[in-house]
Each structure stands twice: as structure tokens, then as C-alpha cells.
Image 1: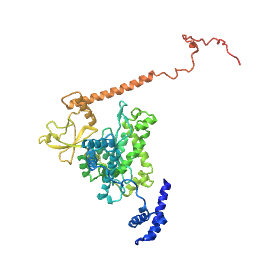
Image 2: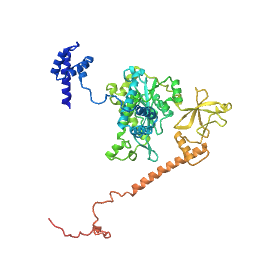
Image 3: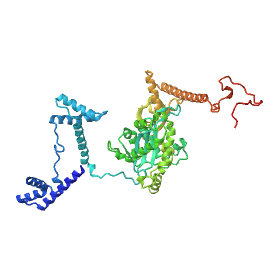
Length: 544
């Protein structure tokens, strides 16, 4: 086949060389016959090929046309083309989940053809039409205003000038601290500084990311991390990167468009920018960072693997190999970031490390920092917490079926003052209330005997009450349910430890299992006590 193509190329070059010599003047019959004899063609072929060459004076214009219909020609009836077009442009976009898209589209086309009395269309034809439609849709991007701008990357020259935030579900299963049972895969929220490639903060939780997760992540970005690291038992770890961002680069998730986030950013002059919808490449820095972190998890116990890899390697499901709790996984992740990633060479920094790049940037361009006053730092957290509106009633403030009280409520309840309430999902024992949206007061449980609970515990208690058929939900019933659930967990943990201890005590000791048989029981009879004060009896044995 290659030799045939080479012969055709030489033939076309020879014909083009002769035609180039003849020029563009009208060709006489005698010259046409001479050229035909020289090229081994008929006179009519010389005239026909010369017309094609003069229209486009290149050798490839003389190449013989491929047999069959022209490329792009459509041989289906017009009615069949209309059916295919209707399925691809109207029916297909409305289908959210298709198990086998190509097969389902083909079946829908054939169903409509059968109803219209048209011959069935082949799968290959439908596939070609679908490919042509995708190419047309892709060409539409060329007419967009941004198409004239060549592709590049986000550029930031100062620390915290541009911070990207994104969420991903970690590829590892974790255990409950009390029962040591698998509770699922946690969600990881990451904030990365584009200029230095340093990770400014992370937040781990079992629930899907929400406005509260963004608030807590921004708190770790803006505030020093010493207290948080000390709570993890990692007080010796250095993670100095912090400050107030100038711009947040986000995707279009609902938690990034919450009222709490927008109001907090307005308060601290943080600009919000959003990526184009369904264009993850516009958040390439944080997306690549997430993939890097997930790759580092492959060696952890409980790390996920694909089903094909699991079958090929004959490994156990990750749920059975999980060994880390959520706290232990967070400790591992902090060490991975603060002591490994920050001090590893980065290709995007021309071989420098993120830690050294941060240090060089903050020396010349100090970032904006919050005051060291604890009240100012608490106010920063409050501004980003989830918010809602309530009216102060005679018995105080009620939210999530929980009642709160503050002395100022005695005045506000006289006018049924409408207030803004901000709450911390990890600690519902207190909420922050404001009547003007500027200053906040801290309100605690009206019943001071109530213990601290989280929003997750509160929701689980409500689900348990609904499952039990309880018609009314009250504060006392919620706390009673939570206390009962905590007792169940504590008793389950105690039973697990007792069962493990009992199993260990029943395990035979290695010292008791001798590899040598007892001579007194060699015949299977009862054990006979040996008198070691007497001389041993002689046995019949060969003497060397």
C-alpha cells in the first residue's frame, strides 16, 4: 500500500511538471498529443487534468478522486435526517443519565423511524451524525469573545492576591474514633495561593461541603494555625502561611454563592470571581493540587482502588483495610502538606519550593493580616458563618428546635425584634445574634445544663425521632435522643474493647505450644510423672 501511494505521488509530480512547462496559454491539439504520448495518457485526459491543474496549480490537484460518494454527502431521506436531528438536538440534551448513550440514542432513532414507517438507520450512521453535531458545537466556541485571547494561565505576583478554593472527596475510608468502624470517605476542602503554590488551609468533614465548611476553611486561611495544630497534637509543625485573601477564585457550587460568604467578603473587601460553568480547567491550580494529594493517598490503608485493579490484584475492598480515624487522617494530611509538599521542588515555580516562594514574596509584598486581638479574629469567623433570620419571642430565640437566651433579649422581645443569627455547625451550644448586622452578641442555651452538640448530631437525632414515629419534636426530646445515642456509642466501644481483650486472652500462648512431643504421652496414654533423681533407662539405639 505504501509503494502504491509513492507511485501515485511520482505520477502526479511528473504530470504537474509537464503542465508547468506548457504554461497557461491555450493548448493546441499537437501539443496535447505530444503530452499524452509523453505521459501515457489519452488526449482527453490531458485536457481534463490540465483544467484541474490550472484551477489550482499544485500537484495534489491532479490526484484521482476517491471512489464512492463525496465526503460529507448525506444519502438518507430528508425525513430520516429530520428524525436523527430531532433526537440529537432535542431529546438527547434532556436525558440526564443514560447507561449506554450510543445504544440509547440509536434505539430512540429507530423507534421514531418505525413509528414514521421509515427503514431503520444503522448505528454507524447515527454515530457519524452525532460526531458531526459535536464538531459543530465545538466550532461555536470560536465565535465567542474570549476565543481571540490565546490560552494561558492565571498569573499572580503577590501572596494572597489570588486564592483558589475547591472541594473533593478523599480517596480513603476512615473509621469512627469510638467504635473503630468505617464511617465513609471524608470531604476535603483546600485553599491554594496561586502566586506561591502554598496551601493556605484545609478542612475535613464527613458531610458534603456547605457554607459552614467554606467559613471554617477561610478562618484557617486568615488566622494563624498554631492553635489548630496544637489541637491535633502537632504543635511542632510549622505552617506559617496565612492572611486575608484579596480575591477568591471559585467554581459555581451553591456553597460559594451563599449569603454568608458574600456578606463576609464585602465586609473584608475580598473580591469573588467565578469560573465559567463546566470549565474545570479555569481552576487548574487547585484541581491539580487535589489530584496530587489524592495520588499521595494511594499507599494509605483504606485507600480506594478501581474495581478492575481490585480484581486484577486480588486485593480486599478498601472498607476492610481502613485503619485511620478522621483525626488521624487529618494529622497525616497536615504532615504531608506542611513538611513534605511545602518543601518539595515545584515545576511551576522553576524548581523552587512553595515554602521558599512564599517567604520571598511576603518579604517584598507583606500580605494583609488580621489583628492579633482574639475578638477581631472571632469577629472574622462570625462574618462567614451560616446565617438565618429569626424573631425574638417571649421565651427567647429558637433555632433548630433549640432555645437560646441573652439578657438583651428581654428588651428585644418587647418589640419582637427581627435579628440575624449565625451558628457554628460544630458547636450549637452558642449562636451569634445581631439586630443591625454589624455588632453581634453571643447567646447560649437557655438551659445551661445542656451539653455541647453539633449540627450533625442534631440532624441524626431528628432522623431517629422521625423514624420512631414521634409526632412532636422538642428540645428536651432532641437532647434526650442525643444522650441516648452517645451512650450507645460508648457502650459499643466498650464492648468492642472487651471482645478484643477476651479474644486475645483465649489465644493459645506460643510458649505452651511445643514442637516436640511429650515422651510420657507418646503412646497416647495418660501423662506419667518422671523421676529425675533416678538414672535414665537404656534404650535400644545404634551406637556410632
